[in-house]
Image (tube, rainbow, N blue to C red):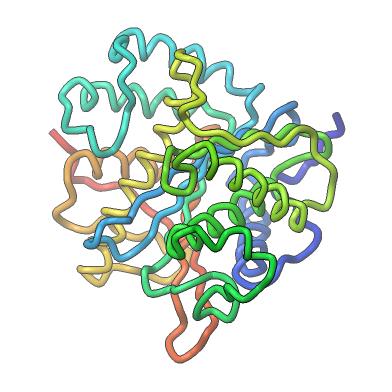
Length: 324
């Protein structure tokens, strides 16, 4: 397979928010050639997605994605198996909400160290809650559009969230993939993929939307949820990474907003005071970007007095307040 030297490559400039995000990704790689991992060499590109920020206290909806070259994850897989046998042989999943479990809290450091070996990119998009839609006129989805008629039964909020996730996955696949790579997308068992019927609709929409972003042919495209795990917990453990990142960033950014610490794009942000120990531990891990697994965060907010959106590339550094 021909190898492209650039990690990010999206020739056709998409519209709206994706156009800005495309330019930012080009600038990130131009400025630092090690900021992104090249995922074009393997046979299968895997995308794992998880979501947070649904609770009323959160200021942002958090969409977190792990994109990886599945064939180059052998080091992660070997360490993961040993880690699981040592800490969670009963099959329990690592999840942000359950880190109060003593066993999982003790297992977290080794899990994060294992995740560093993934040949991939962790990308999280934070969308402020007062952004009503990323589509249409910026105020609402046009349900009079005949193309949306088959999906009128979807709850409107769920459909908006599904479209956001599908467009971001399609955008990242188009920019990171190589011709003829197979694409495997695994979503958390969320409301957007709550049952077999909705998963089929999600798959159809993904196929349609991704075709508008891709400027090359890919191999097989498959969609599933973490329910597809074969019992080895391989998919579950991969899905734990965006789950942990999403939970950590939702709490961190909400606290930053309360304390007035949201900075300009590209400036490293100090962690806010009062974070839980699990959030501090995850933030300290997340703040490095010199491992095979790269980390990126983008924040989307409305521009006051305009229908346009502001997209920032956010940077973080760790905390001296190390958890005990």
